Amino acid sequence: MDSLPFVKMSGAGNDFIVIDNRALNRTLTREQIARLCDRHFGIGADGVLAVETIDDAAADFQMRYYNADGGEAEMCGNGARCFARFVYPMRRVQMDRVSFFTPAGLIVAEYIGQDVRINMTAPTEMKLNQSADFGWGEVEYHSMNTGVPHVVVYVPDAERAEVVAHGRAIRRSAIFPRGTNVNFVQVVDATNLVVRTYERGVEDETLACGTGVVAVALLTNRVRGLALPLQLKVRGGDVLAVNARIDGDTFRDVTLAGPATEVFSGEVKI
Image (tube, rainbow, N blue to C red; front, side):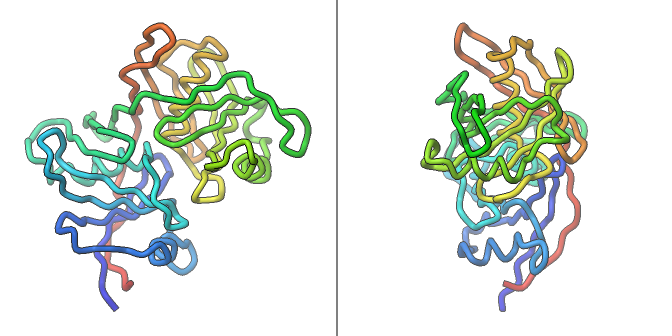
């Protein structure tokens, strides 16, 4: 068996296995990734991040992200913040920022004390005030792609939301042929929201979802008229901050900020 060095990291409770693959000599199968992420038989994580080199003056690194089921995804907001914290000592220029490519586009991360703030790619595919019956009556929902697809459903009490059962039904609906992440949102006041997320690929509720809170904040600005920036409390207890510049019907300079910390490091047999 081969030995794989790794670092376990957490972004507001969204946890990741991070692998340094700058030598481009590691190729993990879908089954190996799923086993590493298994919380009973592996390290346990919501996904795997791989650091790769890239021959492009616009970026320091390439970020590859794999969900807990082993499938590769275009983007992960909290994963990108953990990725940025991991590569801090590796960056080419000793500045308080680093840049890296993802399949969703170029990400620039800034270091603000223990927090990491990243720019997000401009959202696409926004749909407001939709409704459908997913099996328990008519549901009003809104959707947006913030690197990966998200649905937002407003609820009076996030604590009582049936995140797994209802999230799974919406995620599997024929309305979303590619699948979707599902966010259940309680508006607390003009600046604070509570968010619980069912994640596609993890197929369960996670303690936080970066692309999800971005979709929630931007859609809440459109649907409920709340001004940005917004503070979003996630299931893990941390608060993430989302901001953007609004230019007519377009969101520009979208950012996501919050904690990103190393939990432990080690080696695992694969």
